[in-house]
Amino acid sequence: MKNSIWMEGFQKNEQKTELKKKKVDICIIGGGIAGMSVAYGLKDSDYDILLIDKGTIGFGATAYTTAKISYLQELPYQKIASTHGIDAAELYYKSQKLAYDEIKNRIQTYQMDCDYQEVDEYILANKEKQVAKLKKEETFLQKWNVPYHTINTLNLPIPISYGIGVLGAVFHPLKYLYGLKSIIEKKITIYENICAKKIEKQNEDYIIETNMGEINAKIVVVCTHYPFFISPSYIPLKTHVEKSYVIASQVKKPDHISCITTETPMHSIRYHKDYLLYGSYAHALTNHLDDDKNFEEMKNRFQNHFQKPIHFIWFNQDIIPNDGLPFIGETEKDSHLFIATGFHTWGMTNGTLAGIVLSDLILKKYSIFEELFAIKRNWNFTRIGHFLVDGCRYGKAYLQTAFIKNPKFYSPHVCVTYENGKRIGIYTDENGKQHKVLNTCPHMKCHLIFNEKEKTWDCPCHSSRFDIDGNIIRGPSSISIQIHEN
Image (tube, rainbow, N blue to C red):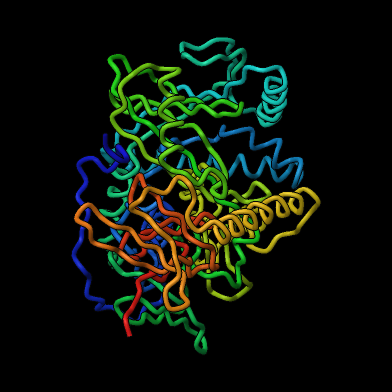
């Protein structure tokens, strides 16, 4: 059984990069869908631009998506309308449709071979309460003259009684990203294996501290899925992380549909060539800490519905904003520090949108979406309520891991203890070698949980991940947890 289907056939570049360009106009940090989309939007400008990624381009969050290109999504419009008003909901629809059309246009213009396919896309409901919500979402589509159709049945082994369908699309996210890369790198320098650790303002410029030296830039764009700094954006106070699981299973007759249900548990379905991709079991990262159990639960859910062999299985982690809208913009007015995060579970459209919005703002063009996605935006009762729920989740995870160093699901090969006053995690490999690391996440000091499935130390609060030797795999932490002997 393999990891993400998108990585099949792609070789990661493990070579260290020598940082030759150290002074630029713009530094883009992060080479996923958002960072590469920003670079694409700026490629024809007169700026001297550098894009860096801590690993291999596209092998972060983008490689774990289900890669749906959608403007229908999961009842977003009534949720946004209830928090921000009907005008904001319509503007969000326009932003998603713009991104949808932009992806299609790029693929056609450059004739990208990325398995792009237009499909019938559905959002489905079964229970009466969910059907009522779905019909409420339908009123928004009617109001905005969005072409759609309704169904009462679909050839799937999941119960449904009502559905809304529009024209959607799917593709191979890494093939698309590398199609963009081939266009961008003709004009923009791209470095891999460069990890940004710290950003400091120095006079009118920014100094970016990396594992390969310092970079000086007038403008910095952070597209790292989850920003590695807390101030000035304070993203941990405005979001929580959601974890969900995806299975790919080979089928004889793939269908030309993409769909998602409104019920809990959620069912997400699409096809890629002769594979069925099924997503489910979404939960807050702070809950369900036993990953072996989580994967078994996901496998059982899949078999209960499809009874097919499993060829790929993986999980993804999404940044969920507490008011339903992504954060795309400048951290503070005239700061020249930009971020893009909080894409919910719709990174393909929102990552593309981030490229459109941020490149417009940097080039001093007007963007109708600037205020909607502003980093600093007004709080209201709904948002405050979600903030309090998120705070309780983080508090629960912190206390749970603080007082229970070694949960029952740990194998005998894993142990958390104290040595020389430091909390450390120990993993003993099959050869009897001990791998010791610090057991506290450098980002916001949450204690780490061992992931037996993938042999990693994971942060249950904000999704940082480290290997058994303490090397950082995914942020927001930009610092490893290795133990350095004095």
